[in-house]
Length: 196
Image 1 (cartoon, helix red, strand yellow):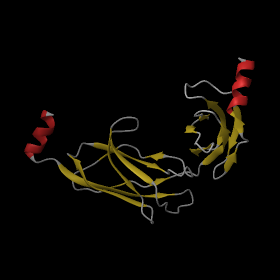
Image 2 (tube, helix red, strand yellow):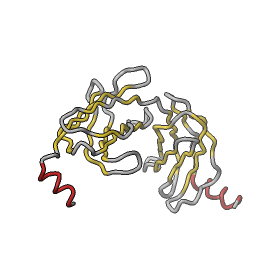
Image 3 (cartoon, helix red, strand yellow):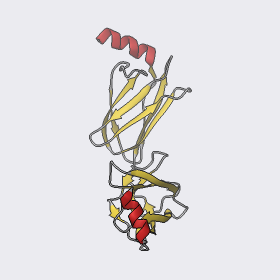
Image 4 (tube, rainbow, N blue to C red):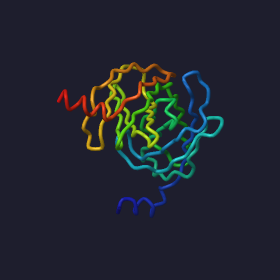
């Protein structure tokens, strides 16, 4: 805290602007992508601000505080699940010098399906580089998006984390939706107790 007060007192803290454009793999801009600005690098730091890309795929964070040595990163997340999350490298924000960080979001695969349950069911998909998690809705549907192409192990679990039956191996293809056959958690639970 003392270091921050000293910088303010000497007048070396100022602001900068962080801007960029988010593209799909073909170079087209993506609208409606959630952009988060964090201080620090991947896996650490604090959320500074959130915005959404405009129709031209652009985002802008104005008046970002910096002393010229503060580091930031930008994260882009397509909440529809159609594209894979991306994160910029950590960068140092200089006072008065705009920082431009464009990102390309890869096309994602989606796993969806139905599960009839007497209680909430958690669906997890674990792959080589990506994992996802979704709760079955009151209507019995679920969707896991933002998945990199590859093979995933899909597991249905009860709220305590206990597996409800067999796991499924599912191949995910970029830009495609894989629909799983319906699963009855009662049937899965009885299978689990027979095989346990």
